[in-house]
Image (cartoon, rainbow, N blue to C red; front, side, top):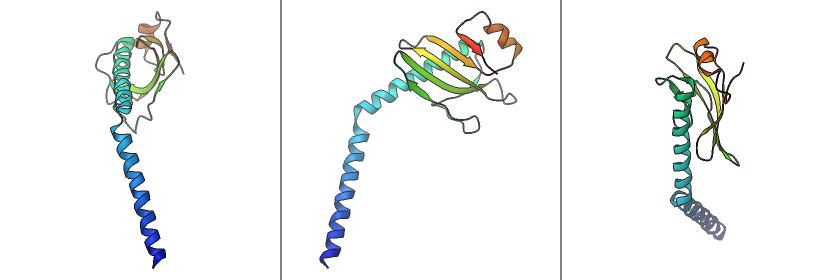
Length: 135
């Protein structure tokens, strides 16, 4: 009988530790602040992407709007800014085009790598040294 009581006490203690840890993690203001910063970075990257490719009505799959069909998207803080990846397409008939963007700490565009063969886009970005179209 004492063996069963020990199991119940152990299970209760583990459950209590998990509940307290989860509560502290959820209520930690640092997590909310970091998430708000990441949302701000992704929204800025969307504006920079639209501006760089010269298309306002583009569908974007990124960390705020994930799309499993397009692929995974990431946001990563670096030493001097952010790296954001995702996918875009012009319309439903277009395929998803991956991109990797580097932003400075003040969210200005440092570099943008695109995988897109659209001749109009190639012509549009050829004068901007920050933008590279890859195979």
